[in-house]
Length: 368
Image 1: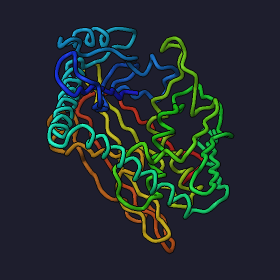
Image 2: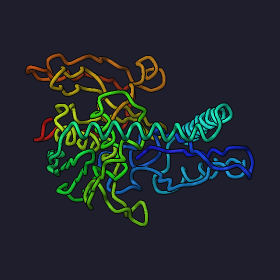
Image 3: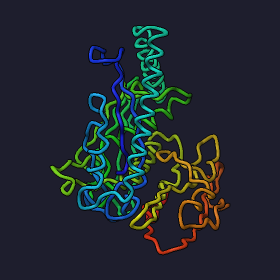
């Protein structure tokens, strides 16, 4: 998947004698990182190599010296190198800068309050999240909560949530086998979806942190949500669709089991276009599912997609495309005591020949 994470260690003082106390991190979606189609989101990839350059882990800075040249070499290597290495390097440099800003803020906190106080409050934030999560589970009540939904090819995604007091086990046993296509997910994606739904149970704003997961055990057997990683990208399962589409279905399943909300559009509607020189990627919004107390929202990004579309003026200036229509599709959300949110109509005109792909779901026999 074309997401790149940059992690920076934070020491109490500058120099080799400093104590490692924190990490700052930033994750960015790179609109192009190689692969068999522009935009690095191929609909029909069958292994990781076809989805772009795989960065298993490397130092960007070592002893104060930049290693961006090594990253550039990697991004331009392999069977399907990136089509826009300049943007990749600029984005990574921006991520490094963001991490340094966070590192500086942390050091200033330590200088002002002292390291013991800062560490104590970080523990307090996690402990508070854990207490609120335990209280939410206790309100839910002991029992087993089950739900099964399907991908468009019929592959089941099953979840059983067992609540005992203030703890829970979320078990995905019964989910379908690893797929030959790219709708496989991985444990990190599943954990993110679980954390999102658990936070929704709390019902109030909290800083999202690991404390939410403290009273919860997640069981993910060998299945399309947990494929084995091969010794090379060519022998590893494709996952780009799992990141953007299967994650949405996992959320639908968990919300269904917990009866928190009706399913939303259930897809990110990943649109990619480009040619040998550039790749552009966007996710297209839709309707949110209703709850027992409120209608669903119209024309919004839901659940695991939280991006905003590029402004029409910007996209038309930078790319050979015209936005002909972007409107709400009135009445498409479904009726009822609480209606579902309406979807949208988006019409684009391409001004020269381009490759266009869409990775989507909820187009088969399993509607939301």
